[in-house]
Length: 372
Image 1 (cartoon, rainbow, N blue to C red):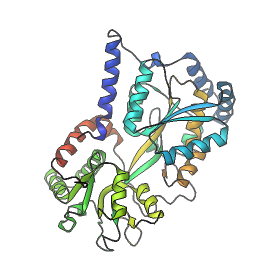
Image 2 (cartoon, helix red, strand yellow; image 1 turned 90 degrees about the vertical axis):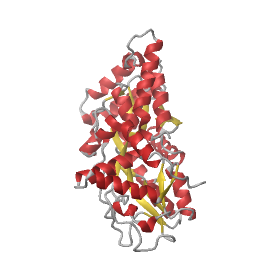
Image 3 (tube, helix red, strand yellow; image 1 turned 180 degrees about the vertical axis):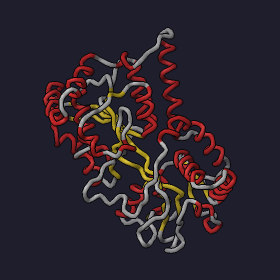
């Protein structure tokens, strides 16, 4: 069962494969870089912050008003985001969409070949970490990052949006008062046969496990809780697919889904929620960051800078309009209402994600599929 955190291993394999194909020479990001891009980024970075945006606009005109964006945003998100950016700056956006691993694979292969296809990338934290670790991203020092929480700032990428982990349930099938009030509740016998787990949620598994251990539970107690949760569950692949099952009443409850997916389904009239009747969840919510970065060898570096800057400023309001959780405080944003956030373990998963993949794989071994 292939799960999420094989990403960093994949990045290592891609780099190794390409360097081996070059007669063993060490290939670094400089092979995918170009003097023009380096110069443009440096020109902007050297200016006072209040002058950087104007300079980037000036340079973007000389580049031909074009941006190549690689993203794992779904089409219903990526298209309006690209259109809003185009409207702001008159820069045409060419979008390559794929899942986060596909985005990483394509970006790494192109960079290693010395032919960067992307100017900017916006995807999951693991893939952004892999690009950063391979030195394919350029640090951003614009004023846009000043409004971002310190925990959402990384060496050369910044969180642009958050996927928040919470259970979700069908309110026709799980009546008021019967909903879970803690992660531990998912192991209760009353949820036998009512729970769905997603096959790639090893990052959720890791965060809940570490949260329990850091709040006084023994490893034995944690293992028993997971045993109880799995005994209550079937599995499905994909959070959007899971929500379709939940909306249709095919499944009563999801151990975890992203709150924006649940909220969007509810806004469309589905009988689903992630909040109890009083509107305040006691379940610790883990906000997983998706981030934006500028490619070192970009063909349109000024446009990449403008997109990075825009996504953390005006673009945050666009994300709110689309029902997503922004990484900054945006007036009118209600995506975190009733939710208590706790830290998401970016560092731990970036270093040991593959080990958690294997543990989660082993935990789910033999669990029946919802569709079977």
